[in-house]
Image (cartoon, rainbow, N blue to C red; front, side, top):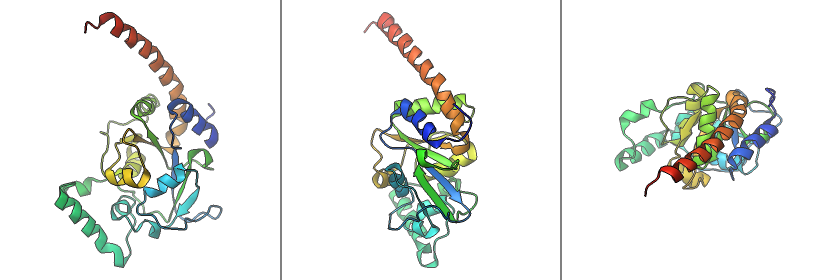
Length: 239
């Protein structure tokens, strides 16, 4: 495919391969609110809740205050809470510590955006007018395997282990390291409706064309290897 940015064609390339029910979500961290996009108007419990809206077809931007309901998400996105909400981070972390969900030693290792965004733009991948910072794919394991292998072939895969909680740290992690696999945490699964049989692959927008190009080779190779492995199983399995 062309190296020029054509979001609609790129989304079709991925959809033809992974067939995900949820549309890939493009996320861009901005220095100022965009003038040509609708501002989010409403209330959501977390930053990852906006992924659900974009996957359903909406294009919009949020301001930092739209993320105040999730202290953990605000932390990974380097968004400072207002003075009256600052204690929520401490309270949320204490709850997680008390439950044994996370330890205090883990917090400093959680990836964060380097710069606080003034606005965050969300859209389905196919409707992104410019190259986004990151793209989120919710996929079943077999499709996630193809995406991960394509990222490796494109030279943008990383040796970072698959991430767990919090899911939102996968965005800054992908920006810093390259394509990331995230299992999705319980909060994200509730807020986004991520299926029990789904996980995330997060890719830098700047790497997306190369990953899309690599998909063709990877899918062809997997089809050939499927036939090879099927034959080997038939010939060599004794039980």
